Amino acid sequence: MEITLDVDQEASPEICRLIYRSQMAIEGDPRDVTGEIQRILMVSRAWNRRVGISGVLLFNRTRFAQVLEGPPDAVKSLYGHIACDTRHKDVTLLDHVRIAAREFPTWSMGYVETSPEQELRFGSDSLQTGPSEAEAILTLLRLVLHERRLN
Image (tube, rainbow, N blue to C red; front, top):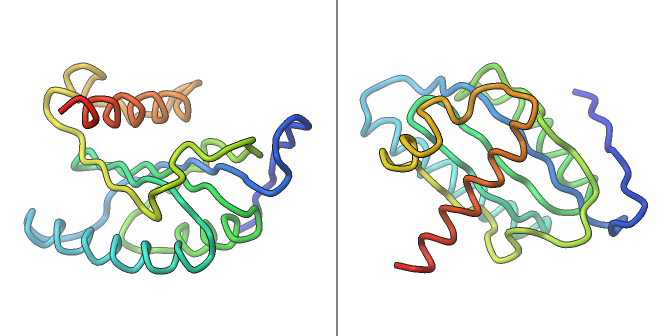
């Protein structure tokens, strides 16, 4: 899968951010889905630490969205593997840009499952396609992180 990188001349040439969304394709009951997501997180966290990638996986019971940050070649390679994973479908690249600093530097792979309250606040279709979908995903993640710090 070929992807290009928008270049922001002000940003660090060594770090990029990639955001995508997809439709969940894991079969089974909720326990099966939870178990598979836990396996994804375990493998992802180990791999991402090794290659210098940080980020967050967002799940709203039917859709995934993920933010990946790190060295451009590592992020591009990982996205190529992710796009071929059969546990999701309709993988759509939303944003791929150079950034000055990581938004999630301490998470090799954070995980956020939206709560009913967050889905009401942002709409149950908060991960639907839209002109500013990547920014909406980042906004949702920032809000969730802010709420977690307050609790």
